[in-house]
Image (cartoon, rainbow, N blue to C red):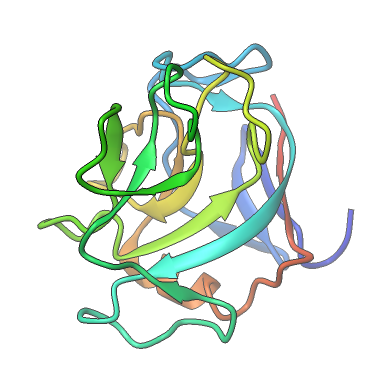
Amino acid sequence: MNADDLILSPQGLWFQNTRLPCTIGRGGLRADKREGDGATPLGTHRLIGMLYRPDRLARPANWALPIRPRDGWSDDPKDPDYNLIVTRPHPFGHERLWRADPLYDLVILTDWNWPRARKGAGSAIFIHRWRAPGKPTEGCIALPPDVLRWLAPRIRLSTRLIVRG
């Protein structure tokens, strides 16, 4: 481990000796993650990018990229672009990244099942804003908006997300 790693343990999410409030997937923590199970995958995951809504917040880090109105993320195992960013409209199942609500105003991307996705092994494991305290995600890790904005400029592409059971 290095000092800039994010560590998710049963005691919470830790970064630089600070415990951050968070929620995880409704399916709990799992080593055998599958598409649609709502689980947060165990393991060590690299951070591969950061996306943000430029109409709602300033660029949170110099390596963050803007979300555009037609951006989506494929979550359909039948899609050749499964677990990749796509342009909408898109003929396969996908999530909108440009949303009416603020859920994805700031998104940190992990390398779960990326770049060569195994069909059905799960997609779109992000770190993003939570809906409400204690409300689980579909597998992502979610933080309060102020904590997410605090974290974003402090992490690096060398930061890893380590998820322990």
